[in-house]
Structures are given as structure tokens and as C-alpha cells.
Length: 210
Image: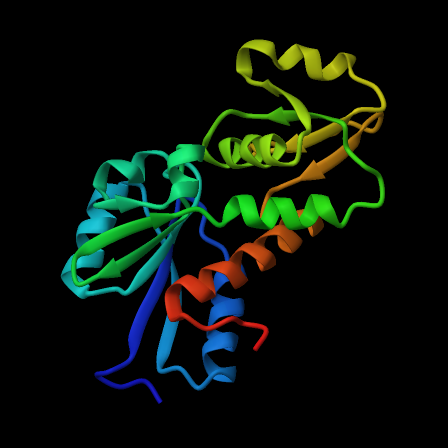
């Protein structure tokens, strides 16, 4: 039952979805935690973070394009955020905001499960999610190249290469091995599940698998 003691967690995005709502509300119920999760539309992350403090929202996730800008409004960053330069998770401790990054964890878990070993990866986009993928490549010893708007035409000359889509753009590239990181795709949902389990531990201190 929702009451005055119910903790509120949320996400902010220009294009909010239901992945987080489905995972966290189910997890809260399974673990008998008095909390709810809601995704919100936001086009101004500073105002959204001000609302977090005013409403005492205990934690929130950040989607594109706010993963870098959010760092301007937090009080502390984790070692992963320091190395990556972007965050996707923030914990609110009575107005003191701590930024984390669980995107890299979800990406790492996904790549580890691939049957084919990746030696080189082309990463599409250079935003906050791309920075997490780059970090994974570094710790997994995968060489990579970032393709952005200025070098986008290079994409059409690639063949039999591994490509990671870290943009909101639909990629039709039948000649390569595509990992589509958008949250509504098969790959994106797998990545989102693993990173959400990591977020759950940050929010609650409980391992979801326990």
C-alpha cells in the first residue's frame, strides 16, 4: 500500500519508457520494499533535479541527453563516473547528490555473453552512453573508433564489422554485426536489465538476485 512513508524513485528522459517502471516496481514488491518508481518526461534536467530535492525523491536515473550535463548539479561522483565522464544514476541523501554509472556494467555484461569475441568496435555517437561503451572497451582491451556526425559516412563503407549504436537513430546496416543499444531493442533491453539490477543495489543496498 502506498502511504506517507513510501519512497519515490524515478527517471528523467526526453523520451520516457516503461522498462524502469516494470523492473523496479516488480522488484520493490518482491523484496517487500515500500517504494514506487515512475518515469518522467524532462526537457530541463536542472529543474528536474531541483524537484528531486524539493520532493525528497530518493534516487533517479538519467537518460539521453542528460548524462553529462547532470554532473554539473551533483555533489559527489563515483570512481566510474570520474573515469567515464557521464552518469546515469543519482542517489539523493537528504539533498546531497551522488552520481553513479551503471550503463557500463550493463554493456560489459552484454559483451561478455556474446559468443564471438570482439577485437574492434565502431561506436556510433559520442554522448554519455557512448562514453560508457568506450570505458568498457578500455577495461576489456577492445580497440574502438567513435563515429560521429562529422565521420558518419564512414559507416556506409564498413563490412563484417562490430558496430554499437549509442544514438537514438535507426541504423539499417545489414553488412555488419550491429549491437543496438536503444532501450526498446532486444540488445537494449538486455543491457537495461543488467544495469537496472546494479541500480537497485545502489538504491536499496540489496542485491536483486538475493
